[in-house]
Length: 194
Image (cartoon, rainbow, N blue to C red):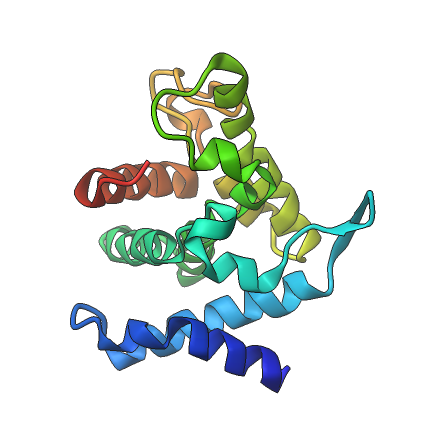
């Protein structure tokens, strides 16, 4: 475990030098990521013998399509938004954790699709739309709550029913998923992510 933490720290040590984030932010981020990575390291799915996640891959944005810094920014935005709402601390924690993990399902998407320049064809777009389902399954397998799994599953739903995974509308979308959708979209526009 200490070796894994050392590898994580060396992979993201430059994060400390980003002035926007405090040392406390980095510590919380590192604890969250190390917990996820430690849990993911011991979980596998019997699909050709592959493990569901290679923990170090989660820290390499060009390798598995998961932009860890985007996920951290979305979690930070979700925390700020939740702080303005009258919800329990437990629900806030679940929403923020869900936000930090919202794109974990991208680890199961072919990297050539995630990094494809230009427009995706229908088959590729349908594959991308599976990442919330993969992420929800991963969260459950890692022992996280059904609420966290549902927040991840529905984080691309729109109030008018045009989103995915299920095309939910309005109050049928869990609050956490709606918050993540807003924060994810805002960060994507602000930082020009896909």
